[in-house]
Amino acid sequence: MKALVTGATGFIGSHLVDTLLEEGYHIRILTRPQSTTNLTGTHLETQEGDLLDPHSLHKACTDIDLIFHLAADPRDWGNKHTIIQTNLTGTHNLLDASLHKKVTHVIFMSSAAVYGFPHTTTPLTEDTPLHPTPAYGESKLQAEQLLWKYGIDHHIHVTAIRSPLATGPRDRLAAPALLPAIKNRRLFTIGDGHQTISISDGRDVAVCLFQASETHKSNGQAYNVKSFDSTIRTLIDTAAAILHTTPPTAHHSYATAYTLAYLAELIAQINHKRPPLTRHVVKVLGHTRILDISKAERDLGYRPRYGLQHTIADTVTWLEANQPKTL
Image (cartoon, rainbow, N blue to C red; front, top):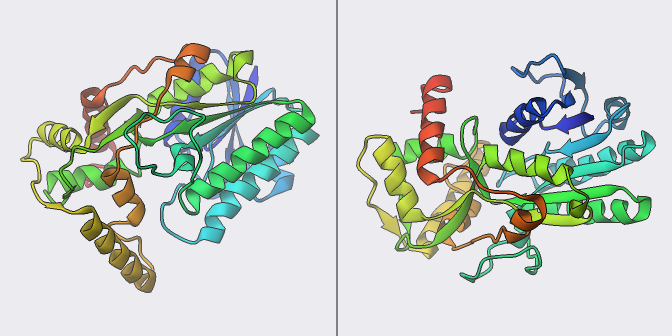
């Protein structure tokens, strides 16, 4: 079996490559010309290309049995057109290339952002109404809708995996922002900190993606994935203990935090730098959002392997070894 993996040099993608190599797959990874990779293996090859370059995607899809599409613009703040172009137009181009090269199996990395942040403590199933977050969530939902249409119109096997906030070793997005803020006691709690969120370890997501490719039950289906649930207060206290520091005690109301994030975004637009706090982060840390993963457990045999303590400890160890200035 030969698989094409887009986004293979990223956080979850690199863990997926590890998983596939362990399972005996031959892998081709799509890399942009300016990208570098430390991924190696006798059954691994690289192909330069870009999601917005259809010709390069046709080359990448040649002699491929299965596509794992993880490449995306994951920003929660920035130019909406750029985010949607990468996540939707890029997916469209890849699906067109897959049809041209007769690839009949596509697994798509979606996001819990398609649900938005409904005001409920009831776990969200795959049938929960979808009210996506701006830009990123919208682009993922539109890409899913395109995926389903291609599956029906062209009789190909398509699956989407929806993950909430993901972290773990190799995370270069969430952990390098949150852990230093906890260590330096800059992070504040929104509200009482009792809101509960679902979190994925990237290594678990990789296994779920692989499992989705191994069964016909996943055809035309979306699946939630997560590793554990945690209150924000427990998350902060656990991370502080692992970092050998006193947990930050500052807190703000949701309204205050949202206003601060809005102002930070305005200043960032002027300075052309990423804001230290975004409204999306306030929503993630300020709302209860729990995913129900019973469908993935039933259909795919998915079982989370990592809990809160294990994931944070491994993430800290990885950051200390690979990005020592972060902590």
